[in-house]
Amino acid sequence: GGSLAWVRIAAMPAGGAGGADLAASGGSALERTAGSAAVDRDSRAVSLAHRHVFGLKSNVKGNVHFTEETQLLYPAGHNTVLYQCDQKIQSKIFPGTESSEGITALAVSPNKKFVAVCERFQERATCSIFDIGTGKRRRVLISAAGEDTTKEFVCAAFSSDNKLLATQGGAPDWTLQLWAVDKGRSNGSVKVSNQTGSEIHECSCNPQDSNVVCVIGDGVFKLFRLMEGSFKPIPNQLSKLREAANQNYVCHTWLHDDRLIVCSESGDALLFDNGGEFKMVLACSPGEPGSLLCVAAFSKGFVAGGENGVIRVFERSDDTKEMFRKAKEVKLDGGAEKGGHMGPGAGSVTALVVSPSEETLVMATSSSQLLQLSLSPSDIMKEDSAVDNVLTSFHSGQILGVDVCVRKPLVVTCGIDKSVRIWNYIERTQDLCKHFAEEAFSVAFHPSGFHLIVGFSDKLRLMNLLMEDIRTYKEIPIKACRECRFSHGGQFFAAVNSNTIQVYKTYTCEVVCNLRGHQSKVRSVCWTPDDSKLVSTGADGAVYEYDIIKEGRRFSDWAQKGTIFSCIVAHSSTDNNTQTNTLYVVGSDKMLKEIQSGKNINSLE
Image (tube, rainbow, N blue to C red; front, side):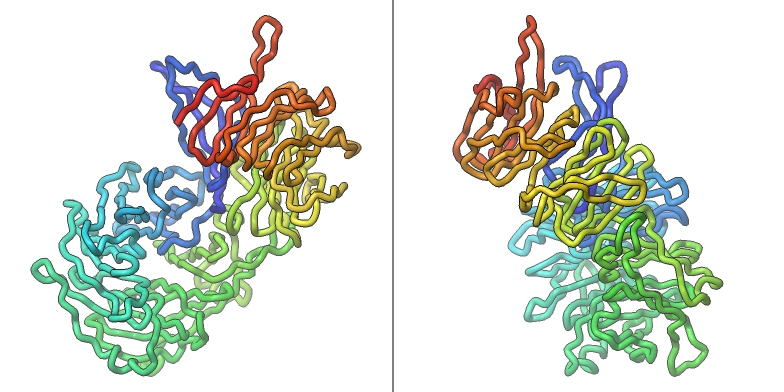
């Protein structure tokens, strides 16, 4: 959801490797090649390797970490990316487990050598520990089987000596486990929620005593000590002092002097000593609901992020009554895009991390943006602080359409965030982004790279791609077109209008023909290499081949009732001056089917 990946497709013969680039949309069914790779089925196996991923998975706990001053670790799609900020390259991409339902939490060890990637599974939660230097998976921690099997870890945290890892299981049992990293086994576990099963948000290890673990959640603030294989609760005053307030605690951090800051949903920052004894509610607390959603410590104090993209920097004060004072407040606006309009806003700040030199603050937001802010003393003093994208701005939410330009290294995408974006997969940059008033469901790139078709909720629009803008030059009354495609020569384009496919001339927008026959929505269309025929498939399980030269007459058909097909491609081969089109379709039966002259000649599971 919301990530765009470039991968390397390589045919691997016995003696070497070769290949071509492939662009794919994260979470979508459409993949397009830019180039070609001749693959001999008998002698070569095809492998895929990620080249670059544009996007940020926003619903991951702890979804941004520094591993060095210029190295960032963050999740994108089903991968964890190591990004070199100075070189602007993704040096390593740690792949997710194939059968998992997605990444739920990340943690990096204090020595910056290991990353823990937690994933949700239908059966049991797992946590993979990777060596950041080599990229290899060192350990896989799997939650215990039984009645209280945990399907996901909502948070993970390493101990200060890098030897232990705390994982917080999710609903309904909310089981905390402390693992020995080198042995890959659990030292102990305990259910940490209250009698009503309230949600637990975070866990961490005490920096002075790795066997002491802190957990916070809705109406929950608890400390446990691991003794002889079992967790013992450590009494604290907070529950008694604030019981009437019924506070929900959303984030916490251990300060550099090993004291503890716990932030509440109502906007209060609470200070504790290392043993968990409550000291005070800080006078500098914003006191606004949702103002403290994430917090990170640095040598001078701590930084907090909240709703509406507000960042607050708090520094230690000489006044013992207030302890800390607010030194800076910055509001993120989502950033104006190059050549576009204002985006939908930054959303809430969901994660913060301070660089090792404390020069830079990086923030992740609920709208899937990765932003940076200078923390240097000179910049902190300025009234207006510049907030920049770490890589570029990303889609917020699902990507609904993607297409690759034939003659330029460009890809176009559109999504539910109402934006259309142009990406350069050689330079690994975003060339253009424009937000519109309507949602865009599909997009197609003209082979020349100068024109687009975008299927908006109200109309289908032909648009010119300019240096700094995307401008409409023709509108066609097709609402919510979910599939459109230019012909290979660019002289025609096809647009789906519910059960019908309409073929137009590109430069005059005259109707060439209307292709009928589908009994349900058309899900995918594809032109044959010579543009003489158009193939289609849809939710009715039918596969049709139309002859465009002969006024759109149906050339062949094949159907499998009960299957919803989602994608079709066409391949042409010539034998004895006879051209044969082979169609490949995939759908809800999870089979790849090979169709030729209206017959299913092969199926692959």
